Image 1 (cartoon, rainbow, N blue to C red):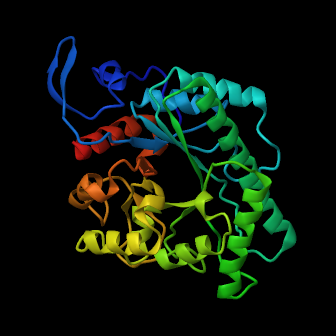
Image 2 (image 1 turned 180 degrees about the horizontal axis):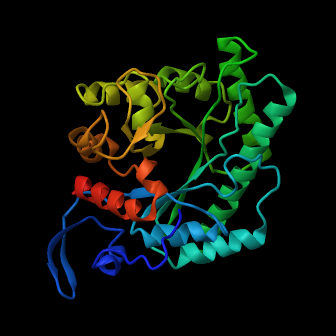
Length: 333
């Protein structure tokens, strides 16, 4: 995220950054900053955003702190470059050192955008797998350090786009994705998970339905290390009606993939209509899903304790990111 020189956050940012791990409602704005009353909840809400790792992976932690969230999504390397080199122990130590002194509780690692595990092309398939190996290795090593140092934080896993049908048949493409995931899991033993992200179904992209996601997981031997990230915009564009049938969407989700296997929600509004199959995110409350439904999703008890992470257009601007986080917290209140 670009920072504007001399930018000063809204009054009281230090106060609400310190309370970022809780759920609060501002009462009044005083000359020395706002006072807050903490709402009583049955569970902790984890609210987050995608943050930049530019200049060093540890900076993603600093950016999460800066915007006052308790959860973040990161990409440890450049999103449009193949990742083939393991992340060094030195970089991991810097990241964990920063995490240890922060309020960040949940971290979702997002794979590079080039990955397509449905490819029959051996080089493309291997590069896609290796990118996941690099990120899963990072996740495992960070998780072990978290446990060793007794840090109250969690690595959720490595989220990735499964791919699109190209050279192979539909059935063979799904099987290829499952095979690729198992290969990655075999290369990186441990407990960290690969998390398949739901897609909008644009073109030949796979993962539009919960049934497709289920088939991908079922083809993996080590199922306990495979979970999901559900994107509200992608599923809406894929035909799931969050507005008029939220209970139906959650029922389908639970039946096909198990809500317990959903490790994060990408909370995005949609710039396109229901069933459009177009991947176009909108800022919260400014799209076709709308503020009311976003609020309903945030407060649905079936999704309790699952982190909500934004990937909205507002995050491209430093100033707008503060505003979008405020919108998120207001909707969560």
